[in-house]
Image (cartoon, rainbow, N blue to C red; front, side, top):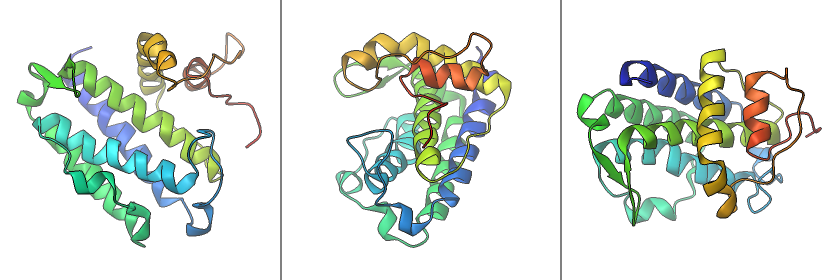
Length: 194
């Protein structure tokens, strides 16, 4: 997939993440999530850090400032708007052709920039689904973006299972929507009641 095809999908994934964030109510931040190690507040903070600040810093090849890793983004009443604005900055950083050249240091290993962008799409949408499920929302993506998500999950499934990022796959019908198949491949059950 070319840069010209991937950047619009990165933008679509970021827009959907911003929409989901705006739907989170403050009283939901203590709720359990499909990511059992996180309550909603911890999950949202992880999601905000790595999918918006991480999005921009990966494109620019700069380190995340240490103070960001300890920040409770949700302590700000306008955190969802700040997240949306940071997502916009990250997407804009990836609009620069130089962002797609070469490799990105992921802390001990380097990965081609295009692969990093694909993993960021995955992080935006999978944790976006986790947040949406926790807060009574649904994820809506184009068929093309769903297919990209499924491909990226399948490419990375063994690595993510090895490090506990994905659970065992969940069985879904072969004709299930592509988003549901991607979720199931990552160990998320799109049909289990929240």
